[in-house]
Length: 278
Image 1 (tube, helix red, strand yellow):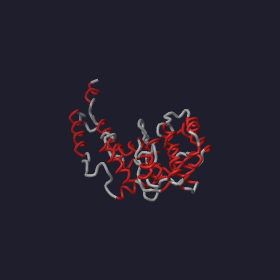
Image 2 (cartoon, one colour):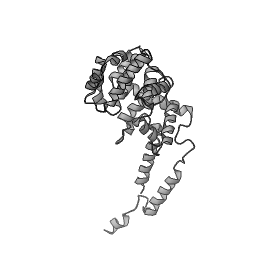
Image 3 (tube, one colour):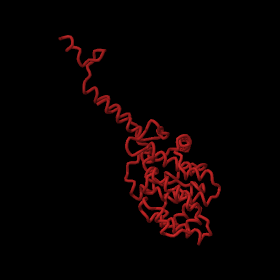
Image 4 (tube, rainbow, N blue to C red):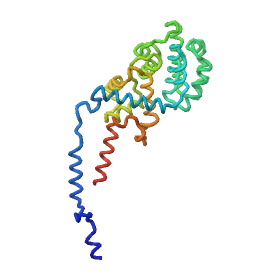
């Protein structure tokens, strides 16, 4: 009994583990924590941005979901039809899950495959087709927008994010950026809930994303990151990452292509190490 008691709390070398030792180790680790360098919430140089783009697009090319509006954009050369398709999908997705939207989108495009077709529909027909999706004003604004493009712009969709937002009813900054980048290849970023989460975690941004100053900072960051060679794919990759990997709860960090650039991931690992030493 005496021998067992004498050995308790000792390491193989005979040193007793004490609370003070644990505190000292924890203190040393805290001292070794990297300071927040200048530009902590942005990307430090072109090389880091390039690495982020390459990793994200490589992941997207292998892992993206097969969605009908994505297929149409890659198979149709008519830019107006591509823009119309993205516009319809983005408006439907505003307050509705992807799984629900797919069926509605397919039925909508089968009935009104072009802006011209939609412009000739009645509001009653549009509301009937929209039935079950909710937020009927979305369908009404799509209808109004199609009529405006046909009557005022000779059927030609505005091609820049700035014009899309200014000229089309119900098209905000995000939808305008999505249509302009995906359909027309404009080098502009997009910021939605998924992108906010990805940017906030990768760059350690803890501020309220609804405040105007933070919103502008996130848009600036998105516009800095967007890949000039593949702006539409890059924006869809950011949204896809937030929807499928960098989720609000239980994110799949081991599968994330942004992990090497993620401040939140490093911070969680650091805190985990601290907790082990407590």
